[in-house]
Length: 110
Image 1 (tube, rainbow, N blue to C red):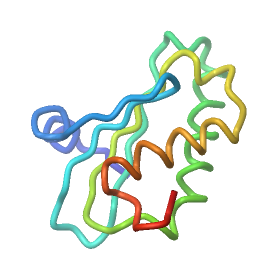
Image 2 (spheres, rainbow, N blue to C red):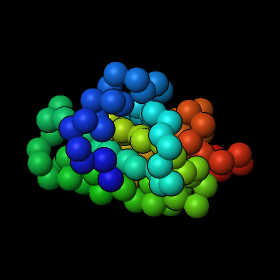
Image 3 (tube, rainbow, N blue to C red):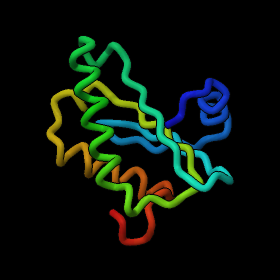
Image 4 (tube, rainbow, N blue to C red):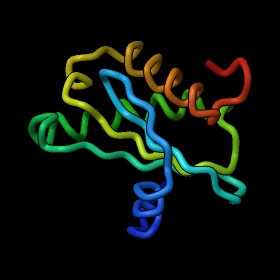
């Protein structure tokens, strides 16, 4: 998981961004042996309960994609308000599409 402020700052300054109506993904290539994820859920999503539900659903979508994720990336997933009303399939498909377009997923991982 991304936790350090300098990691988020590096993503903000040097990372590329891909967008979808449900979420955005900011990605940055690193030399690490793993891929690290961070989640951003703003108050625009709703109450704390709604934001926590979105985070749980995003973590599950990431978990399902783990076998096809390439090492050496930092990824920040930014939830948009429409994600609160989306079903699990739509969230997983949107995340797979963004990560695939960014090069984070191995070929055929989408």
